[in-house]
Length: 217
Ligand SMILES: N[C@@H](CCC(=O)N[C@@H](CS)C(=O)NCC(=O)O)C(=O)O
Picture 1 (tube, helix red, strand yellow):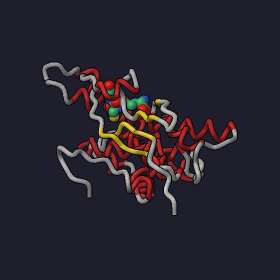
Picture 2 (tube, protein in one colour):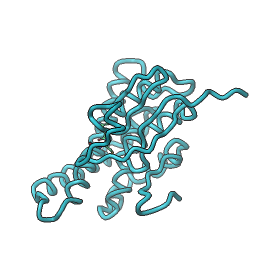
Picture 3 (cartoon, rainbow, N blue to C red):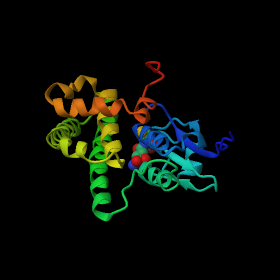
């Protein structure tokens, strides 16, 4: 059969949780084969000129569509893919359902944001690290994981959407960068839910890895 030529370009890396979310959304929506990934290394303290040409924010993921339009951030890209989907629906149509999905996504994505900031802070020269920032990131991470432990059954009752993806990527990033946190030991419901999510094809095929430290399983 004819295969659609891969024409969309995605600034991508194996380490980024936001990229993971977009690639998982591409798999969920059946559009992954239409995306050409381009390894783009970014950090808060450097500028990647190649990424900046497509996105002045210099962030990944950035998707350049068939028409040459650059899209960011990850949630916008997910909605674009969902709109062109031949398969699932990640963004519910009705307002109430959509708002609920976006709220769950915001919680999971907010967790990801905090973990990224925390990992950046603790990766700085110890003399420059701010104890106040480190302890605030720690406290907010634990509070978010506790809130998810208390409410994940509600999420579990919903049909899979962008909310599940946002939360699964957030807790996945905690596993990836903060194994030392051992968040699972006191949060059995969230841990079991995360394990079930991780079996989903889109999440199985997008497990993060750091090529400097490890090879994919
Ligand atoms: N809100 C953005 C966050 C993207 C983001 O911060 N990506 C990181 C990589 S994981 C990045 O590009 N960092 C470089 C920078 O912030 O300059 C999204 O959802 O796409």
